[in-house]
Amino acid sequence: MRSEAQLTTAGQVIRALAAAHQSAGLYPVGHPERLDHARSVVSAGAALIAGAGGQEPTVFVARGGFYLGTVLLPRESLALGRFAQALAAAGVESITFTSGLRVEDVDALAEVTRDRAPLRPELGGLRVNLVRPVVRDEEPWEQRMGELRRAYAAGVTALRQASSRALAGEPLDLAATQGVVEQLYDQVSEDPGYGLLLSAVKSYDEYTYFHMVNVCLLSVALGQAIGLRRDQVLVLGLGGLLHDIGKAFVPAEILAGTGRLDEEQWRLIQRHPVDGAGMLLATGAGLVHPASAVLLEHHAAYDRSGYPELHDHRPSVPSRLVAVADCFDAVTSKRSYRQPLGRHDALQLLASSAGTGLDPHAVAAFQGLLGRFPVGSLVELSSGELAVVVRQQAQLPEHPVVLLLFDATGSPVEVEERDLAAERPSGPRIVRQRDPEQIGVDLPRFVASGQLHSLPGVDRYEPGSGGLVHEPAPGERAPEAYVDTHNEPGGHHHHGQGPGHGHGEGQDAGGAAIDPDVAPPFDPPR
Ligand SMILES: [Fe+2]
Ligand SMILES: [Fe+2]
Image (cartoon, rainbow, N blue to C red; front, side, top):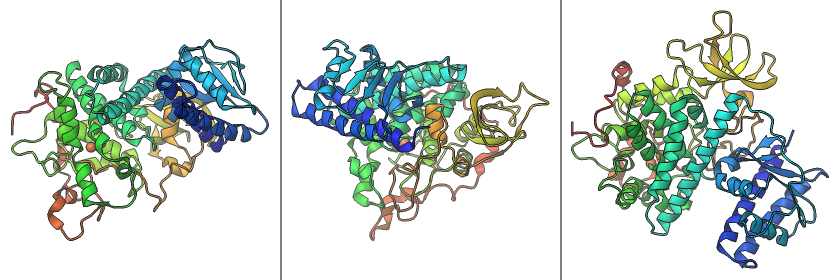
């Protein structure tokens, strides 16, 4: 078993290698920028070697992801999909780090991955393909997750590029983002289960991008579940993927800040819907791209208590659907002011603002989609085994499809998919939810990697340690003093709205379907 510290170090090495690869695309050999990145690889590589206890550590590139030994490095695999592709295209299947590692070796490897030098097995302190990954046959569920992870990685890459283009004053590459949405759509439309499961992934380095891909996955699954047409779901997906893209203009130190926001910072954050919609409009694709409504209105709130202010109409149907997905993903993430909510509690929070901040029909549809034991939650079976829910079966809420993780003695098992409905009546059923943290399971990481690890500690919420700023989603109530208001109480009427003020009036909305033909994106005023 690899220690968490080793996995973290391996992640740093890969990120540094990716940066070296990128700068090699921009600068000639010997450029100071390139040398800087190569030096980071050398120092991270030295740490990796030092922690390997006398062995020479090997990083594998397989199935579009990165592995240290047999352990998948989930965040790097999801965030650096492009780099994994470049390595694979250059024929690099493994990189072994030896103690003689020098800056020139890293540069030589970058020339190979840039396709400017032939692949050689010996690059000084780096050995390429010294060992080959042993790729055993994947279970069907692993294949599904593998394909989804690649689509997810493409989403993160597209968003990273969209932000840097925005900052450079260039228009969005709409074709690239649409391509990503179609990939995710293809995956989710086949089977929403694993898409919903993968949406439990979080990143604390690139929170906003991961959040946007998650909201895309959730929105697409929701659109499908209520019977929207493909073209309508794609608009929803694009809106979900880009909904926070306007945050490209919010300074990183505000987004990564700790503690309360001052009013100026809060004003900057509140601009992102308008900025994002503007970016989409500026592409000139169709006079008004239908997804721009989603970008503009995702914080406007169903009861119009949010921002920006809508004068005579509620947010459009796609905006209301994406708002539910946005709220769900936001509250299940670690925030600057509190722990992430479990998936079940998050659904309750949505329910409490149905009819006020959120569209009650959209909330009901979302609850129906995730199910009584929400997809992605850890459950205990009547057999004593522990499993994670993958696919809900509406008529048999206690018998979903699950991935079995632990046997009745609490020992990890070879993960396998089990259809509890098919095992009735003698097979197990769900008896209760379990708190992953109590049991020491890092579910987001399991979802990202398919492998069980103990909790890493680094990404856990420690009160006072700061965290992430994500503006309260519609329906969510910010804590008191989320914004430091000094002495001007009227400045941000938004933040008193939210759960706690709701009356649960959306609860009886269960049966009412959303008419798929209520033309997105622009509803008639009502
Ligand atoms: Fe937002
Ligand atoms: Fe968001």
